[in-house]
Image (cartoon, rainbow, N blue to C red; front, side, top):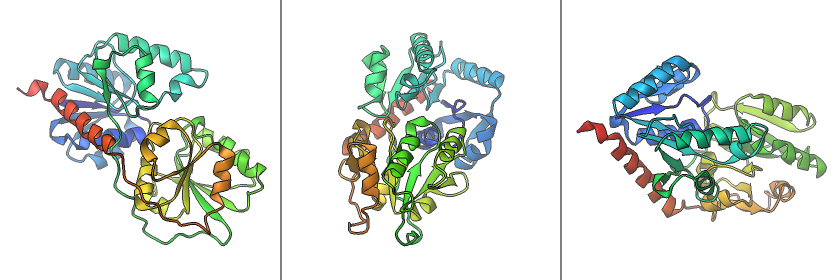
Length: 332
């Protein structure tokens, strides 16, 4: 059986939906999902047939130890291995938290220490950033698994685009940390004198990072679209183009959904984006070039044609098969 550990997920972000996708493929094996109280309602709504346990830290430790005694697979869709538990999967989404910021070295050392005290499997969601980082941590090849995101269904663009005359509405995704590079993006817009020609709708949660960044650019048109209140389909129905100025991302689930629906997407030319979105998105060498591309939509085709990489689709299926096999050990 599978006990899912979502305890380190703080909001309905990409990590949350990544985990839900994998659990949804193996519902008959899922015993329970461990979450923070703040995510209890949303998780029950997503997985109505599964027991969801809202945990304090003490309850979480009890549940994790109990899962280990039962020989359940402890499936953790984040990079938080529990020492001493071998029948355990963790997932590394990107190296950013372990390479950037004042706490990066401490986080990396704690991860490496925890991995040394468990023979858990370590899934990585891309080959261009996450896999090399996992290898650098000293994880042996036999414990590494390519476990990419499930490619989503195409976005359903439920209403016509609603941009004001002369203004391009740009969709931005996520508000969690400085890796989104919004200060650099908005600074390039200001420097190019395009503040009146671009409006930004940002899909995510209200965070200190987002509020502090917006305060630096009072002249820009920046609107938060709360992801808990509006569906991704509705959000994408009211933008002309999606863009990302991020240097390090693990995947980009909404980007994939947009490309499959034919919505134009503008990205920095970075290995992870190339790995998944070649043939659909347009790539730019730097943020300044990306900003200039946002205003040239009127005389270009607004439709893209994109097919997900076949090797990624196959790897997702293979990773689910391995999780299913690990979760079936104690059924005999």
